[in-house]
Length: 121
Image (cartoon, rainbow, N blue to C red; front, side, top):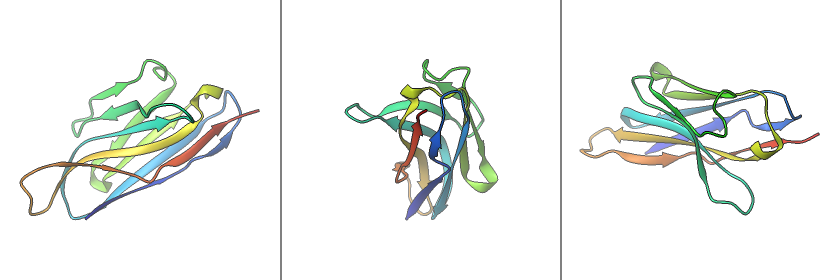
């Protein structure tokens, strides 16, 4: 079994900053891509940012220049630093990891439980 546990959500004013982290644990052989997605009320879940095991990153256009994704491979942890937050960044943020579990031939996608980020004045 593989678990993803997120932390760091909360309430922040427009223009403020917030950091999220997500730690993967369990029967992990290796982790390929990790990333963050978000889902606002009444909207579909959308990609925020992804990062490969080698450190290559990809961002949604809406967050480029404001958000930074990083990871610590030794800790199986991915981070999202969010700066210059806007009202439209309000959403539940989900961590994602593409994991090859121990004793399996295939890799699978796993999701965290989600953490609420609210940007409000």
